[in-house]
Length: 114
Length: 111
Image 1 (cartoon, rainbow over the protein chains, first blue to last red):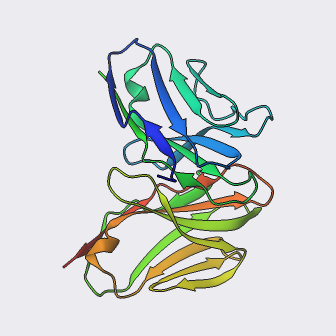
Image 2: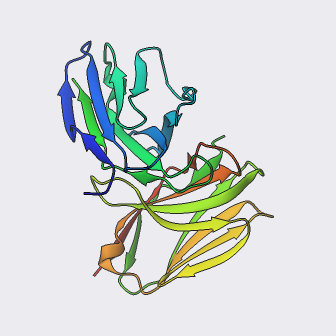
């Protein structure tokens, strides 16, 4: 398909374990975003990548969270030493350019920390 | 105070009714306004995209922005059960990269 692809769609992990979430953006889209959606909450910005520029990490909630984007395409969000409050849907989005362009979202990874 | 405020609902209306969904925002620098629709267990999909004040119509959907009162609205005419979803408003400053979202309003259209 031509949309944003995220994997896994669901992840259950034990508290204290590390998890990796993957995002494959739409081909040709230079901007990539990670958002978090908790139950009953709106989308919380986490991190943003644009081309080869340094990422905007201002939304990452703690140093347990990190993300990388390899080759300007696929991105991985890593959460170390997961906590129960990390349980949420993690959404990835991409856009053609960074400025004012609409975001196209994947279906998210539903993370449950037990 | 959140930059974009949205009543989370839930909102339940009968089929065929006109639905009004609303958001307020606090940052006067916001220039672009969007509405996303999110079905259960799916990612948000862009529904409407407007710049500055005014109305934009697309089929049964009308987006309205009033910058003087910092108010964003989405109207759905002749609502259908397939419109049942969570609707999220979002705003962005011109030239910025981060889209700021409201909490989302959960809407149910009853047949």
